[in-house]
Amino acid sequence: MSASNFDPIVFPIGKYTPVGQFNRLQINEWIAEVDQLPTLLAKLSSQFKESFLDSSLRSGAWTIRQLIHHIADSHHHAYTRFKWTLTENEPMIKAYDEKAWSALSDATAPIQLSLDHLSSVHRKWVFLLEKMNENDFSKRFQHPETKSFHFLYDYLGVYAWHGNHHLAQIKEAFARFNQN
Image 1 (cartoon, rainbow, N blue to C red):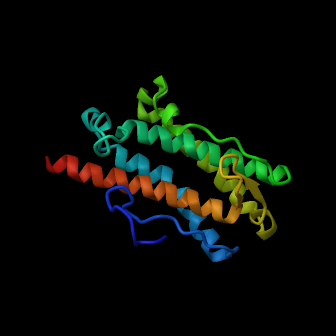
Image 2: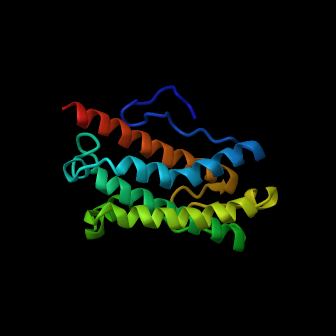
C-alpha cells in the first residue's frame, strides 16, 4: 500500500500497490485479513445507531448502510471471480455498476443481512484460499473494461486492501459522528 498522493479522508490507509509476484508470506497475511474482516466489521457495526447508518461517509458519498452492503456485494463478486479463474482459462470476468447496485432497494435493508452474507462468503472464500497453491494464485483473469489481466495473488491483495480500506473509512466516519 502506498501512502503518498492520496486524500486521507477518501483513502485513510492509502491506495493499493500491486506486489507484482507471488509471495506466500504476503498471501498468508492477506488470507488472515480476509478472514478477520467480517468479525471486525460486525463488532464495529454493533455500536451503530440508525442515524449513523443513514449518514453519508462524506459529502456526496454513500451512506454507511450502502457502504456495508457494497462490501458484501463486492466481496461476493471477488469470490466468484476467483472460482471462474480457477476453473476457466483466463476468463473475461463480469463487471458490475457499483453505483447502480448501491441505489437498489436492498441497499436500504438492515445491515445484518450483508454482515451475515459477508461472513458466509468469507468463510467459503478463506477455505478455498487456504487450499490454493502458487500455481493457483498465478492464474489470471481479464477485466472487460480495461482489457488488462490480473493475477489472483494480486487480486487477493486488492480485496484484503478493499476490506481494510472501507473498514478504516467507517471507523473514521464513526469517530467524527460521535464527536458531533
